Amino acid sequence: MVLIAGPYRSGTDDDPQRMRENLDRLESVALELWNRGHLPIIGEWLALPLIRAAGSRRVGDEVWDAYGYPVADRIIDRCDAVLRMPGASKGADGDVRRANELGIPVFRSVNELPAGSPREVRDLRP
Image 1 (cartoon, rainbow, N blue to C red):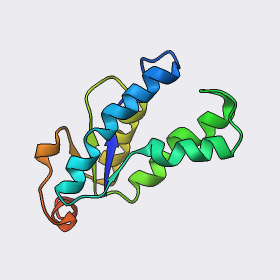
Image 2: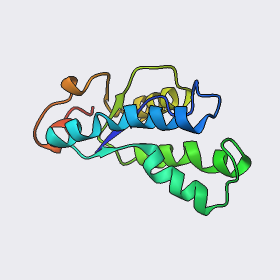
Image 3: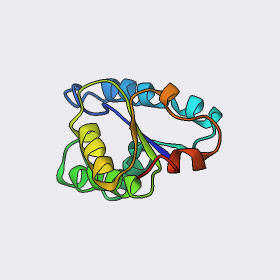
Image 4: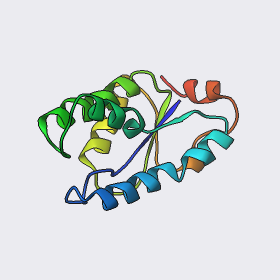
C-alpha cells in the first residue's frame, strides 16, 4: 500500500474548486500505481467522509482539524511506502517525516517504485 502525499488544502485559500484540483492531481497517479502492482491510498479518501460524518461545517474548523492529519498518521502506520508528489504541503511534509520515523521508504516519482509485487516495496524497509 502506497500513500500518495502532496498538496490538498495548501495554497488554495480553502477554495473548494482549487482543493478538488489538488485532489485530482494526487489521484492522477493512483491508476499508474495500481497498474504497477501497488495499492494506492490518499488520506483524503478516508478523511473527508469522516470529517463530514463528524459534523464539520467548513474547511479548517475544529472538527476538520481533528480528523485530517490524524487519519493520515494512521494510514502511514500501515503503508509500505509513501509517494511524495511535488508542491508545498505542510501535511505531506508531515507524512514524509512520519514515514522516515517508521523506516518507510519515500519516493518522489512513480517510476522509482519497483513494479510488480508489493512485497518488493516492503523489502526496501530497513
